[in-house]
Amino acid sequence: MKSILAAVGMVSAGFLAGTSSANAACDTVTITEMNWASSAVVTAVSSFLMEQGYGCTVKKVPTSTVPALTSLAETGQPDILTEVWPGVADIYYKLEKEGKIVKVADVLSDGGVDAWWIPDYLAEAHPELKTIDGILANPTLVGGRFVNCPVGTGCRTSNDNLIKAFELEKHGIEVFNHGSLETLAASIASAHTAKEPWFGYYWAPTSILGKYKMVEVDMGTVDKEKAKCNATVDCATPARTGWPKATVLTTMAKPFHDANPEIVALMSKVSFTNEIMNGLLAWQEENKATADETAVYFLTTYMDVWPNWLSEDAKAKVTAIVK
Image (cartoon, rainbow, N blue to C red; front, side):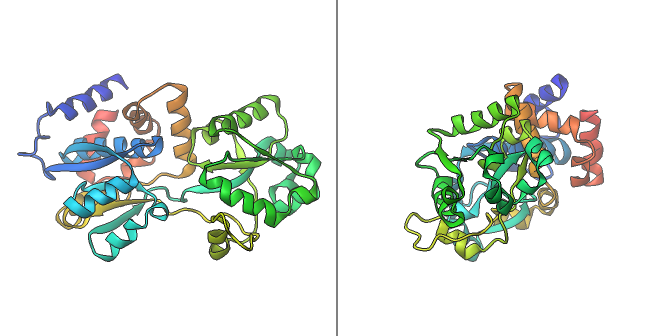
């Protein structure tokens, strides 16, 4: 791992032969480094593959969703945006309609996940709790409590409306509102340690779901219109529905996309399941690792995944370094 990280550092400094913009096959690439862990890992992995496999000079741009999209609209930069959640940024659809941005991949292959969960050991002991109807019929088996988000979070609004729609309190389930996302995560850890019942909300990809095995509760068919209403504070008719999965994309500025077919081919395949990303984030947190170190862990651990993303020539170059 240290030798690979050394290579990462040398490439970033422009010391390896063949990586300067004068000699690189794809020249200089600007790529977002969004300000949350999973996106930073995607960027680190993608940068390494572009640098070592395709001879690019990659410049990471620290940012977040709306500023990155605004910059692209005004300047045409960055070239590549990793882990874009268009559902939280209406400007994305405007840029797509104007032809300024091109979707390249679903970077989280099974989407961003909001859900109600129970621990795996509880699901194994009581399979009926895998559905919301089973929980409503057996509230004591989940400890008679629903663990909710803190005030001020987006998940709190949807949860409050779903709580009304499913009539949790009428079915004997108390709602416990956490004061912070940190204590919400800690409650999952505590329940697992003591093998106690736990029922509540969490999302993926996150390190906590990489550390602790949880089972998503089946809340029934997803109705996007009902979910949209549930996500608003003034929803007049909170309704029963499953949580819709969020689309999470890798996108490119149109000029870069059209000029770099090899990088388009690569980035169209860079995609992570939530299970893999949860595991990477758990490893990162446990080892107090950087995004680059986590990328190296991914490359050395998932040799059955990333080689399939590369051209034959790039695969040979990167494999020689990783092995």
